[in-house]
Length: 479
Image 1 (cartoon, rainbow, N blue to C red):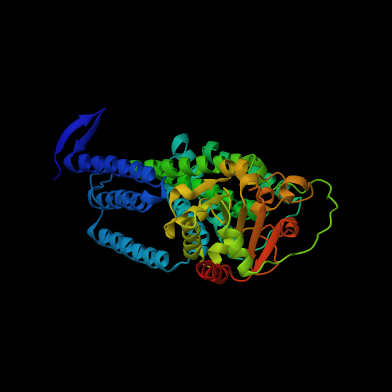
Image 2: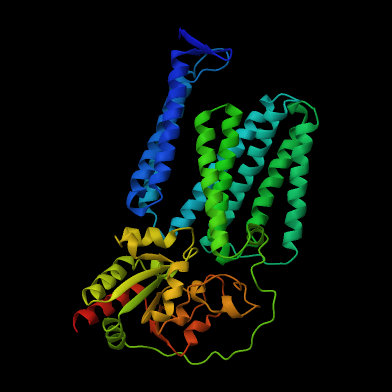
């Protein structure tokens, strides 16, 4: 039998419980250390490993050392089931992460958010019958875990579908009113369950209705949100998953779950607010989907599309002093990040200063372009944020836009009818020359025309981004 080694605030501590608490402290430190390393691309991989090590430690010690109120540990048969589940889940996660393409990384993140939200919601659903009527604290964390977890699950699944092109937008104006009514009803039902004073077994109808309402709200909450806002929504849903995990931790009084959930929730919330600030919008504005589109359309002619040959593009770039590359989702789709790095290295060898202009919401998730370029070993110092490079844009000889669209669209500045009106953009139109690499004249994720392509300073280089860059590199080398 595990001997009692001390008592703190009336609670007896055994050697096993002391080791368990120590492991949670170590796991929390590893989470914080890993999160710190994740702040820089050069150390991000190690940060993931340290944080994963902390989570593995917490799972193993909980399985082996946790005891219930009667002092009984987890039955051996259940231990083997838990270990097998951890092994199978880890193997599936490893295989999926290794096989997924960089372009599908946002979808994978959404799927991971969904699984985390579902796990937390199911914990709340399963533990609700064990809650005590009148225990406001216990009921509160259970209900919050259920609501937030269910919203994170269904909302993330819709986000996954939208990112993968399987689900379209529902942009009807009345959707925000439906969402407000549904959210108010969901919260009211949750409050009723908490303060009713009824036993949990008498509220079976209410808890399942609440679960269904939260799932429905998650779907309807994400459906109206446009493509330009999806990176913000992914970050927000990630914070929801963390908060739901923290609620599950409170249900089980598990410090590791609480600390891990708080870290994820806080990090996701801070990132969401920072991205909203970078886009010059409020979080409420993002959530209700009212991004521009309310003004009068400006009347302007499209102009003429002008193309540029590979040889002319090679000469223009080679004899420039300053070049800025604006990467977008098209770069990721073409897997052209490595050849883009080869181009910037080649130009720097000719004395050209090359930088990458990074928009906060370029791609499909926060930091998508940073991760993509880090994979190609592009030095972090070359990645310049939008606010830092825009003031220097009039001095840049050539801007090369590779697969980006909405983040360089001047409609955000001067077209009140545009759905992206008010969103800060990279001021590519202010550069002396603009080369746009695109497969065709297709519209961006927001589905609107980009008049940058008709600018007098713009030349189009049509074709797959990777193929075009390879030919351009070969042309420069032959000069």
